[in-house]
Structure formats: C-alpha cells, structure tokens
Image 1 (cartoon, rainbow, N blue to C red):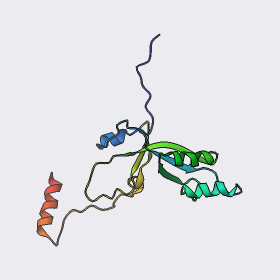
Image 2 (cartoon, rainbow, N blue to C red):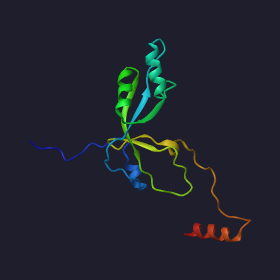
Image 3 (cartoon, one colour):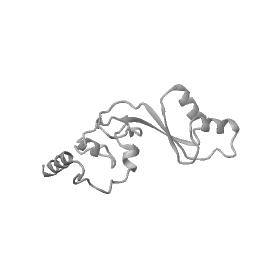
Image 4 (cartoon, helix red, strand yellow):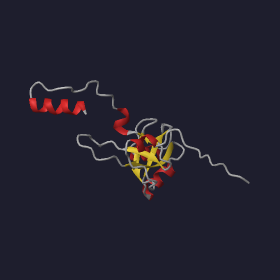
Length: 147
C-alpha cells in the first residue's frame, strides 16, 4: 500500500512568523485559552463565581491561564459554558522600542490563535523622511533611505 508524500498544511500556520524570523519550534503548550461561550445567567451562584474567578466578564471573551490543577478543576466545573484551547506564547525577537505587553499565542500545531497587539495595531500612516531641526539626524535618515 502506497502512502501519499503530500502533507496537509493548516491555513493559518506560523509560516508568516517563520519568514519574519520568529521562533515556532514545537515546544509544549503552557497555558489554557478559555473563551466564555454561554452566559452564566440563571445558573447556580457557584457557577457564576467560578466564571468570575477565571476573569471572564462577557460572552466570547478569552482569558489566558497557566496550566495548573486548580484552573483545570475550575474549567471542568463550567465545561458546558466555555471553550478551552491549549496554547503557548510565541517568542518574539527582542526589538527596541516595541512594547511586548500583549504576547502572540499559538496552539500546538503552530497556528496563531491570538496575534496580540501587533495583530490589532493599525499601520502608522506616515513615514519619517527627514529632520529639519537636527542636521545629523537628517543625514542619518537620508543615508538609511538610499541603502
């Protein structure tokens, strides 16, 4: 029996991340991505308190928690209300001037599930082409453009 040499590749792989030089090695997942799918209105108070303790306030809101037995028990108590995905944080290259407060999250297949701030950020809308105040900075900017 012959096996096909063609492999299936998911649509949203981290291929773009590879082209940008990001690390996408197959390291194990470290966090749960918990999304509230159904509201806790009308359910027992204990269920509502568990939802609040996880930090879920609105429907379709996602929160990230480190994998631990405590969090796993809370998720099992409200498993009918939430969707859980195992994810890990994508290591971004250290770049000066970029705020990395919102990380990029990928699942075990390497698909990006939350691009963080970089995914929601609009383009700058302008480009610095020169500096009229500082001649040294102007020369450096113009030298950077020509190369």
